[in-house]
Image 1: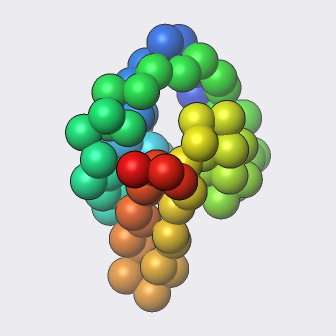
Image 2: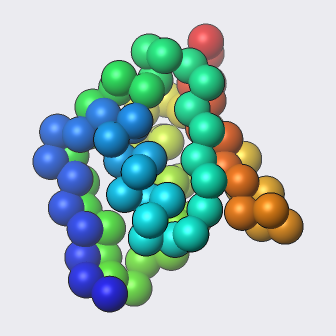
Length: 79
């Protein structure tokens, strides 16, 4: 596993990369949040929880991770 670089990507674009990397299904129901762009990296040994916590914190969002069915929902804090 190698580092992933996110350079000015939208949440929607990052969704696909994260789904492939971690074998999860991600839903982002809010269209504005889907289009929100960010730049960061995901270290090879970084957990998905840690990455989502940081990215959501910087973008005024939150996530719910249901580990039983590997389903993640990302929503804005103030829709």
